Image (tube, rainbow, N blue to C red):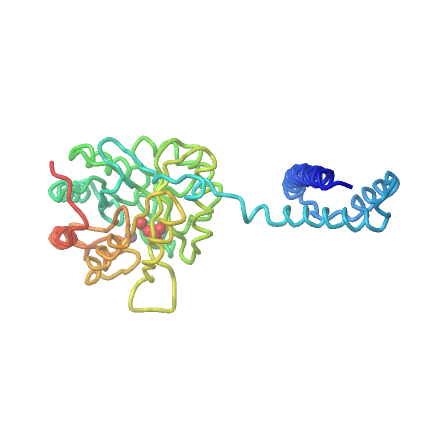
Length: 362
Ligand code: PEP
Ligand code: MN
């Protein structure tokens, strides 16, 4: 055989290799689809009976020159490789909330306020809405401090059923009234899907609290809304669980989701929870969603809130949440951790002095 003929045959082998690779890839993709269907139907991925049928059919079709044992071994390997792809598929699936599927930062734009656009935002207000006068006083203080979003719980998730449970829709109305008077946006926690639609009249941002981070029906219902959602990290949630909770919302078509680190439960008792600062760069790296830090529920201590807020901003946070109340000692919830209005103004000044945050001028 001439050198040229050998080269031609080798060229043909290269072509066949490419075709085989294409066919194997197509086969693996079809296997992935069948794997997905099996997973949803709760069926096992491995089906030895079907595999044996396929091998028997191929052995019967084989007319050489490969012997039957070789055909069975080669196709056995192909089946194994396809099964492997089926097993690994869910882990490799790119989440919609991940940077891998969307490189640019998500910016949640509400009126003039952009969250996640590079300029950090403060969100502040009382733990609970308690009265018209109380939220009005806080709203006025926020306006003076250049804070654009007022928070205030109306449906409070309390550890004890004997503790103040919040004013419900009446509270949301008071919050909205005060916010409107001072040109602020509102955020409040909603705890049940049944309340979402009505609450949407009063809140600009729906808060889903730490205790409800894995309330999947609530996440799905919030995903069906077209309103920004602030999702708090669960009491002991891992990053993976946190991002999957956000995925529940985004996968229903609501892409206006913000994440907020609010401390996790550890053995440490000197703080209410342990503020996980590493969550900020991790979430910013893994996800395109805005990331905020709640310095009130994480630390539970007024004396370290400003340094923790600065640390959060230095780590890349898009915003800070802090609780403030005109008379914290008389507050109906979280009395110990709420800043009075003077302390709040000082907090804003302190955080501003870091150069990491600029109040909105009005
Ligand atoms: C809150 O922000 O009002 C609240 C209850 O916080 P968390 O869900 O983080 O405990
Ligand atoms: Mn609180």
